[in-house]
Length: 160
Length: 72
Image (cartoon, rainbow over all chains, first blue to last red; front, top):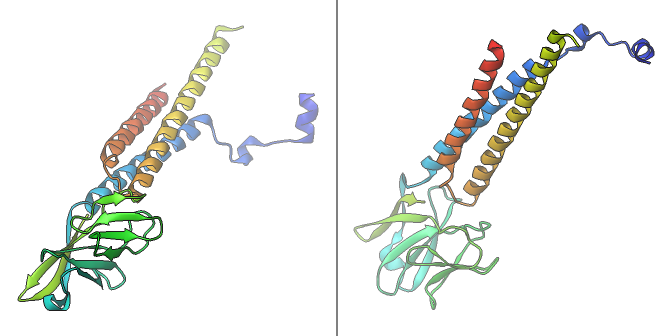
């Protein structure tokens, strides 16, 4: 049987690119090293994402252009990065990324309830600190750092 | 059965066992990597460092086994 099989399907192992078990073990250990390096890279990336990051400051608006109880949209650090500035009724200011942390829908300011509402899945964030008030968002909104320079409002950084 | 043949079969079984253990450790590393990546996409980064340390540890176990095989 074996003889007949070998006659029908002759395999020259030397010519066949034969991979020994030992070589396979080496290859798998190499893959293990690759995964370890990838995990370390992810950890480094995550630590870089956390905390405060400063970008090139951009002017948003004059303070008197944003009445209390209203909000103004702007882009920071790039024009395509949607953010929202809220001028609270008590006179304080806060700004956040406008992208919902659930599925990146833009949030809207609701003055009556003083919250940032995501219409896609009814998520809501506090307009004071960006924390999640309701719905599926898994994380607070990133905060945009604002500076008041002689009555002009500037965005200077982002805190994750 | 000759003693040498018996010893070879024993070594072969041991090799296969180590290879399977190696595969299990790599699957664990893969699971850690994907879990961390998924968590990061949801804004959760707390597990990234412990998972990286665990992954490096598992890799060192694999390297240790490979070195043992190379000596044997």
